[in-house]
Image (cartoon, rainbow, N blue to C red; front, side):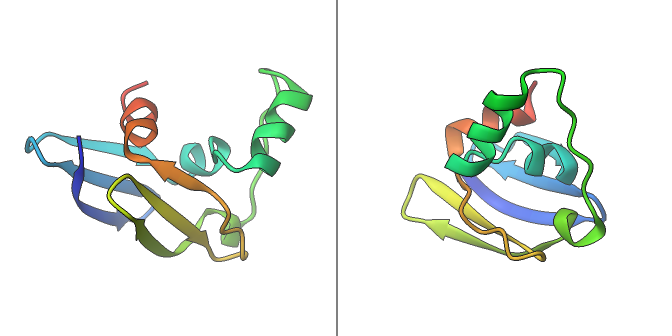
Length: 96
């Protein structure tokens, strides 16, 4: 599926998909599940019991960029911008 609309409502990313279904992801979960190499290795190193605590700017999205026809890049207010969330991954984390 492909997102046709992304919008942020307070601390939630709302996604409307091309089949007209809709999902929501808390920004804290989106950040916690960032797929970049740094965040992935941090999760791997700390295990499943690790729960990061974020500051305000770490949970505010500055920009969302579409990457080709397969993903979005989320730029967070604190400057973190290396996470490329492919559409399949967004769907997976929105429905877990």
